[in-house]
Length: 167
Image 1: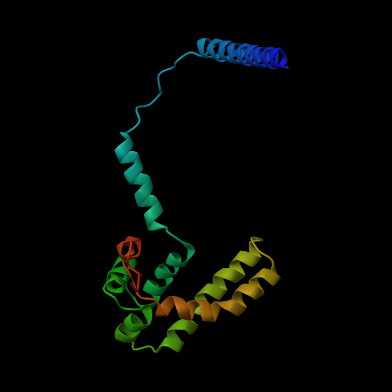
Image 2 (image 1 turned 180 degrees about the vertical axis):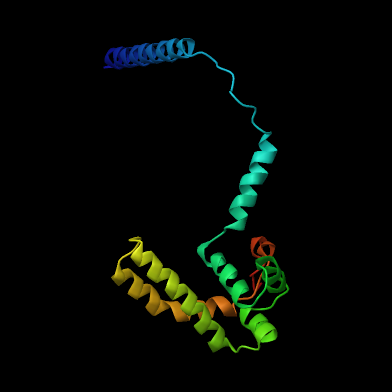
């Protein structure tokens, strides 16, 4: 039995070494066939590329941030000014009350009208069905109410290890 185990191990080892040498030869052959061609254009340093992609991604972080454009238009403000006030700890409802003297219901109704028109345009363009549009419109007022009640919280607070700990 001992001799059988030795032969089995020797055979397995030879198979592994043979397969490894074939795969190495194949990759070495493929590497020699490819030629290194210089890039057609000079690419910016990696730091700059990362920063640009981060900026682009940061500006459009989610679908709801598109609502800032509509809210800013309704309030006769620029999007940057609206975000600046929002980041000072005010909700969009509070900003609407200060700027236009609208209560929360009026502000949500105006945003709902704008978003409903956009949903109708998407249905006309064939991007969604009428059934999908009806489902969205049914949820829209409550979703917009929650969005306009939300106040800004710095991300850094959530990343701290014990930020939400009660201990």
